[in-house]
Image (cartoon, rainbow, N blue to C red; front, side, top):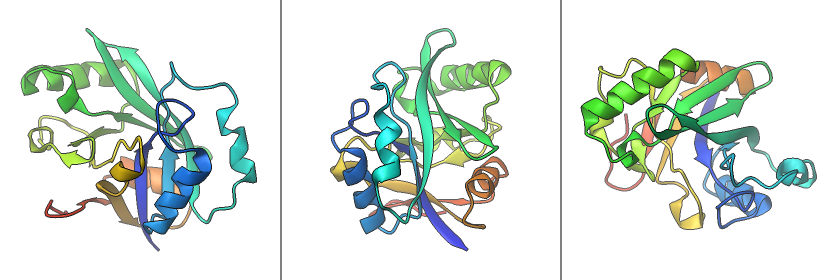
Length: 188
C-alpha cells in the first residue's frame, strides 16, 4: 500500500497553533495517511493526548515526543512509538548554528548514546542538502516540523508498505521510503 506521512508535528499540546483535532483534519485533507505527534517534552501539557480517543480520523496516529538531549549542547530528538517499534530521529541539524562538520560530529555522538534511526534533512520543511550526505550514516527524512496550518505539506515521506505502525517505522529504519517536497523542491 502506498502511504504518505508526516514525522514531526506540533499541536497546542506544546507550542503548535492547532488543536489535535484541527491538526489531524488538516493532514487528512492534504492526503496524509499517517502523522507522528511530536510535541516538545519540556512544554507538553499533562494528559494532552487523551483527547485522541475521541477524535474520528482515518489517519494512523503515532504518539511521540520531541526530546531535548544534551550532547555538547542541546539537540532535539524525536522519539516515535509504534506498537512494538521505536523510531528516533535527529531533528533539524541545520538549526544548531554549527558548521556542517561540527553538526555531523554532534549527530554521531548522539548515535553513541541513543538508538538513532534517522536524521532530518529539512529545516521547517525546507530541504537542507548539506545534511543529505554519506558522512551521516543514517536514513535521511524530510519533515515539516509543522507548528501551524501554513507549515503542513512542505515536506513528507512516502513509502509502499502495509498500513501498520511498526511496518511504517521499519520502512524508515531500513531506508525504504522516499522524501517529498512541495512546490519547486525536489522529490526523491
